[in-house]
Amino acid sequence: MELPAVNLKVILLIHWLLTTWGCIVFSGSYAWANFTVLALGVWAVAQRDSIDAISMFLGGLLATVVLDIIHLGVFYPRSSLSDTSRFGAGMAILSLLLKPLSCYLVYHMYQERGGFLGSSQEHNAYQTIDSPAAPADPFAGPEGRDQAARGY
Image (cartoon, rainbow, N blue to C red; front, top):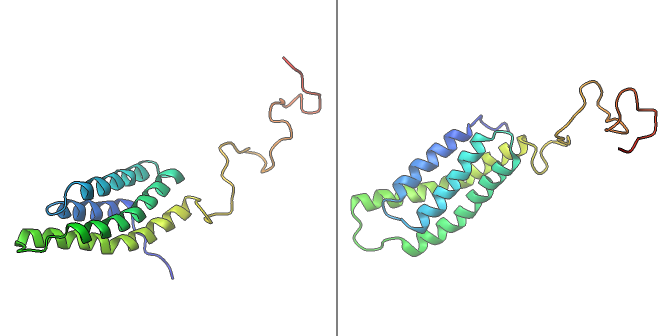
């Protein structure tokens, strides 16, 4: 099954809106946890090739799934909810329900960037242009490859 092309910015925007509306009812630790993870998502957007940024965002999303379940279970207002409180709680629950799908999509983005079990190709910072094999002595110049290395 082919995954839909979902941009990381769209995932961030949706979770930012839902978290902002969820903060109408739940503040404090709910807001800190979710906005911190969203900041990691902004980092992942800013550095498109960074495996660290996308893995931290994925780990944060997974952690907030557990934290949101605990937070909603402990702090859900049980008595006489106003319409505003019902709306905020509903948005926090909707955000929680969408997070596993977001984790799945972000995991595939993580694999595309070369993360765990992603591409089998090794990503090096330096690669030669003319040949795929690295030279035997990377410090030897073109005229000194056959000569012994000289100490300076």
